[in-house]
Image 1 (cartoon, rainbow, N blue to C red):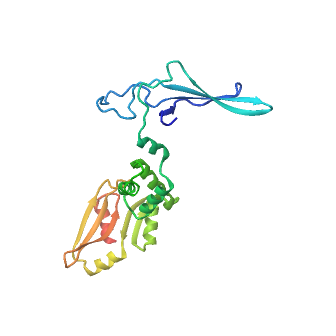
Image 2 (cartoon, one colour):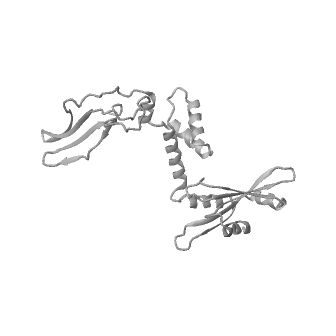
Image 3 (tube, helix red, strand yellow):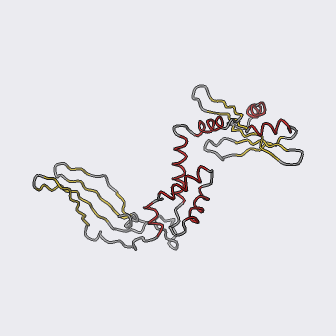
Amino acid sequence: MGLLWLKQITEQKNRKENGFLASYFRCKRHGLPPPTDDPEKPRRSQKCSCMFRIRAVQNYMVKNDQVTIVWNIITSEGGGLHNQHVAVYKEGDRHFAGLDAEEKAYVRQQTMAEVLPRDIKNGLHLKTPEKPQPSSTQIYNETRKIRQEVRGERNTAQHMLALAVEAKYVHWHESYSETKEITHVFTAHPDSVMLFRGYPYVVNMDSMHNTNIYKNPIIEMVGVTPTGSSFLIACSMLPTESEECYKWLLNK
């Protein structure tokens, strides 16, 4: 069924009076291609007006007072053939099989070590060259699942503050009293605080935009030692780059 790229297109109809359940399927490439598609570079999922369609009917047969379920596959006239070659490729097998237990364990290990998903994908391919290379979507979905397990019921902001408390970071935050929405966040590593107390003479501040899901500016404060080496003092997320926000940051 998977290699035929079947897709259910109508709701299942349960007709109790006839005692069967019918499901309708058609090819994923059914329909006309969009006018913007380049015919010179066809994609696996590009529409090509394929008319393949089948109907699976579930019947109930009673024999010797026992009910047996029987599935019948019915094809309409002219609708039982594809107008393109059936997709047979390694990525297709990988797509339906997914990651095995050994690969999931490797992804979990690398995710807990803060390795980027694209590097996990490359490392997994080098570790098991005899297997088809996993897709980026499979790696991202697995890492997202792992992070969700670690985070639990906490949202992103709550998890960040929980990690700051666990690692004994110096941190402050403020939120709206009505909605409890966090607006200001300040975090600094204990070692960074000790370095800044020793070398407080130079402070560089840089703002980054659109690097988080909240679209708030992230401010990085960097100090300089007498040997010319730089060190991170603190990071802060602010709602805006207004004068009041910078005063709050510098006061902290």
